[in-house]
Image (cartoon, rainbow, N blue to C red):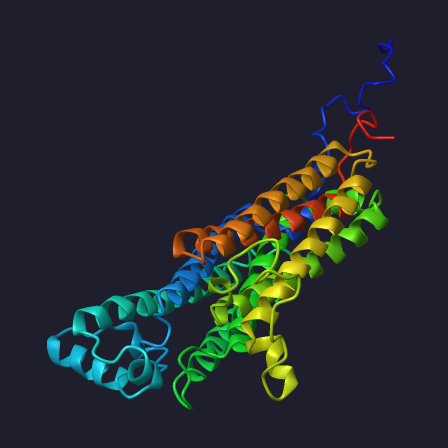
Length: 380
């Protein structure tokens, strides 16, 4: 008589392997971790690029190289004759003739190395992007749906190089001592756009697609929308800061909270045509930057109060960090004005803008993709 079988025993008496799950997902994931690490490297390089660009502007080095040679320009002058040739080209532009006449070769070399380093770093970023992108593409390791996004980052980088030369070319003729401020703002604004895409992609790649979809179901729509508004407002303030830097407006009207003893600066519309004042009038440009800073700070407080009611502790914490850095950035801005924008304070102020930009993106991401969390801790 046969032995009774357990209802949990396999009929044929052999053990079967556990089912393999996630096979389809595994094919779609790609090398998410490796791609994310590559983007982190690019992110760090872009941050350094923004700071080097700021120092290039603060040292008045941006017009020292008067030609755009994307390939052959990678080599600096290698002998005295080559240095003299580059110096001769610089002597032909208005910045030398009207501002730096009598400059020694050693002084020219100082500003030349700053601009050369700035352009060289751009080439390094392009190379790192190309090696990573085409390497992952050849290995078929790019996650599904990410090829266009990663290609877009490279195309924006190429556009940034062209915008950089468009900016520099504006300062080489017609009596210009600096580049056009609106072109500088375009150049810096595009750098922040690239940095923003990199940061957002890094946040997204930290999680699997199915996790993102699950978290998105709990999106705090109102807070996410307000975070988007804060992001756009901060971007406007960054552009206004670039206009201030472009015409050295931070080195005028060095009192606070008033400007030359009044709320409104004197002669705010003395340039013709009138639209030029919004880009070239030091008093009006600094005034716009100040007022936008106050309004941004007030909006940040409003959003922070709204975020305190979030049931998610990570979201509450992210918006609290945004407000803290916003306070610090506002203080740095005040000190920059009071001390006539010395380079060491001005560059820290620019670094603060980078930090605030990324932290706003981070807070917005947490509002859009909140993780499972306890309801305890939310403010009433």
